[in-house]
Length: 329
Figure 1 (cartoon, one colour):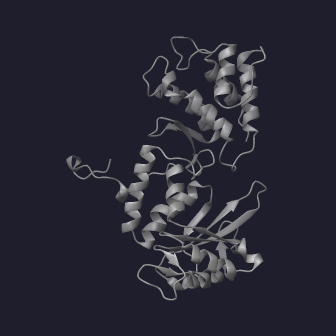
Figure 2: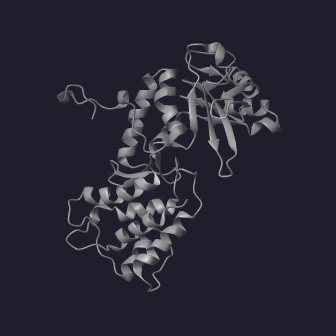
């Protein structure tokens, strides 16, 4: 990723604190403090004694050239630099919310198609304006959760227990996959089932080489098992296998390229548990060539990914304050 030289120089000035003391929202940093700043960002850059702002501008350019998740997300190191720069404990000539510093940073980031903002955790994040996606480091759904994250997870569990399959798709899966970097995420809907051909959602992902992979998603609200007959909200894995096979063999029309294409990979997503027996059954049913085409996501995967990507909960999942006339907070 490349930023304009003007943008690099202005961000470098913010890091160095090169403003008049009475107008600065960023503390002044000497050579040793600049080195410490980049050490706090988990880098090994050490100031070489040259002009501070020019050296920092060069460092930022090097950091932006690091590998990135996709074309809309800067490198993880750059995200750490912004988070460290906008630490609310470093407020200077303003209150702890740092609205002045935020406005100054955004005046430069807008030029590059990004916007900085503070989230509920008081950390600074970047939003890619053309796609309205939040640029975050690669989410790790297996990391320990904070108390507030566990609370959000419990609220989402309650919501999933009461939601329909369409609500699971519209309120949870569509925003989740968009946040994870997929685009053209489209729900087939259930109004006309004849047009689904085994898929509830289709989407695509652009590789760094600009090659495009297409994905289809088969969604079931309840538990996915290998029982001989479907019971209640549980779905039988053999039925899902038939739908996924249909999905992989049927073309979809991509309006962005005006071409009909085949789905490259399929997700089986369950709002409940996918039992071990069900995974084993479908794994044995597939030959070696198709095994890499089909992936699984169950309730725990959905919950963990939704929480670590810091997506807002659906309105129905938010607690209601009786004193606020039913307005979610």
